[in-house]
Length: 294
Image (cartoon, rainbow, N blue to C red; front, side, top):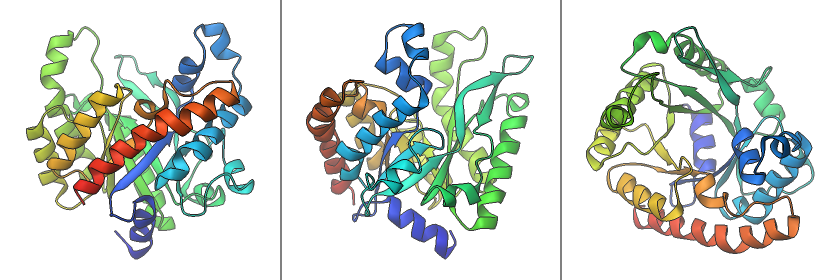
């Protein structure tokens, strides 16, 4: 990392040096949590999502080292109105909601139009997060998304601003669940290799599936820090994943739904109460694991 990137990385970490980032950059996924039907989900506009995300900042993320927000709904509002605490860093998500598919059914990642390293600075961001889809065993699936990583890495390097690179993997058309589950640890390890080869300096990764795969990721990273994401699993499952990842070289957590998926509501009273109690207690449990591995 450059000095500026390292300073940004220090700011997204807790005093113990571990990343503890609350992820709230979801849009489609958050709408699904907030409403049961497609019609009700479509009725939740960006302003309403921004209010929910502001509540997450106020009642949960200000107790962590960093919040991850999208570039659409809640920024720069949470900065301008003082909701975001001065000691809580801000990562801006570059990716748009959903994905496109090409003629072969491969996922093509979307970016929020006009969101660049310079605009992240303008939104008050400490840095940014890029998410792309990779299928590491299928090179033809990755061409467009690899170029997206390459372009974003270059843009943020030119602005000397921290960029966290995340990738997700997925089942191919016709692939059965058992085959995908068997391939999953290798897909995470090899997807990590792709991101590192493209110049990524901080990674956000799905739990690699096994302790051995976590060790392989750490060995590949060779000092590049990686955080484990929650992927919406239940809190108890995620605690086990965090413990295993930390035992095998991870540098922290970037977690969203495992913390707040059953705590957010369009009712601000319910939202504030459950985030202050249930979600905050979960955050403390994760922080305790990170502290034990400082």
